[in-house]
Image 1 (tube, rainbow, N blue to C red):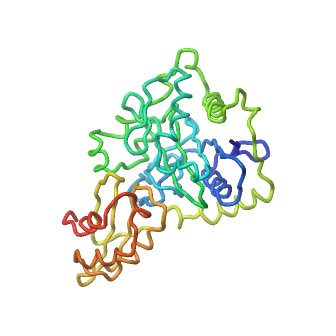
Image 2 (cartoon, rainbow, N blue to C red):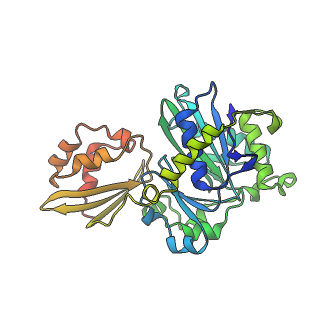
Image 3 (cartoon, one colour):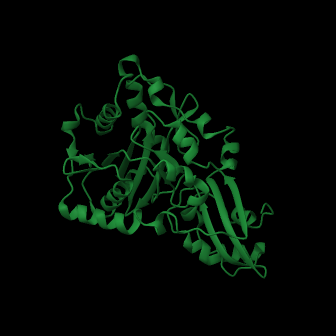
Length: 343
């Protein structure tokens, strides 16, 4: 496995937009003969899933007051708070390894590594969480492109509970479905469970240990690296400027609607903003923390102008495979949700 560090001229980069752009550039342009590992830390940021509505997920006034940025990633899933007290790891893996959607397999090396630090009772739980004594210490996300799986997770070594609680607006139906009361009550710190010999690890010592374990080397200097060229960095800067530093990508997709529907499904939370004109769908925007691989515009465009009748909606959805957009949900379930009276 190759190591690509978010370093430029020997210095680590903490800018969320540049880090996300770096990963996207490598995903689309760098093809090596083995999998790739990207370790990174970011300046304080709320990272939301590709299909989420930023205005529903974040507390913008608090973030403005505390210099916390917001950025939208390319994969689905929910909103997370990240900073330089925790470490994140992303992987680029050949799709032939059949890892897409297999979060237990993705987490397995991390679980084994944490056990070596004395952190036991770690398990994959739910759809994409890693928990320690029923406290969440990681959440993962995946997407697929060019027959390669892009997957990642963060490990909460020393979470800033105050920032996490105040910057995020958790979906109440999601919380209820998990039988939990708040963000604070369901999140844990890895440090609290480290063996005595490791209690004083810095975040970078923790990162080096995890990288060595994930790469299968004894010393990080033994890692097989790919170093980005000046041409690569020019491509990264272009993506950052056009996308991850762009308000339209991070915030601009969602508007206010006449009706707002939200429901929790096994695949995640789906929210729909709906504008109705003379009994027909005049405008629609879909968001949520589900994991889809295709652009939701196709679903939205298929429903514009369709009467709010079961048969009409089912007919409009007929050409689409909803698995690509949401995961395992039937057209009947999705139609029933659109027509629900909980508006």
